[in-house]
Image (tube, rainbow, N blue to C red; front, side, top):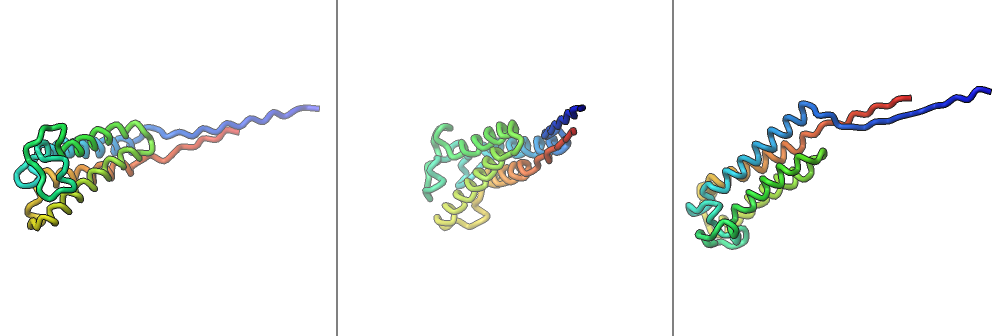
Length: 153
């Protein structure tokens, strides 16, 4: 009797495609916008690198702190984490970084509203850069290539 040998190999991979290039460009553009946001005016003429970290939950934060205690550190951290998220195929780390940047923008705006500021006039350019960078990074993280499945029988 003759024996029949049947082999099956399945390969699943995600090739480096044009979608990955789009994702990389959008993520890097979002990260660049977040870095720019740190050094632009946020509220009351204070830049993100001199505005106290407490600005996320206090209506009248200090505006002369050192860099390591500043609110701009969140935007810089989001930029770094977002770029590091390019190492994953699913993009969830970059998505998280973009979402945190958007939430940070929202927290500052809520505090401005609590302080009876005139919105959107009192929102500084740095906060708009942070919102834009977070949105672009979030969109970039959603662009992921579809897996390629190869089956051999």
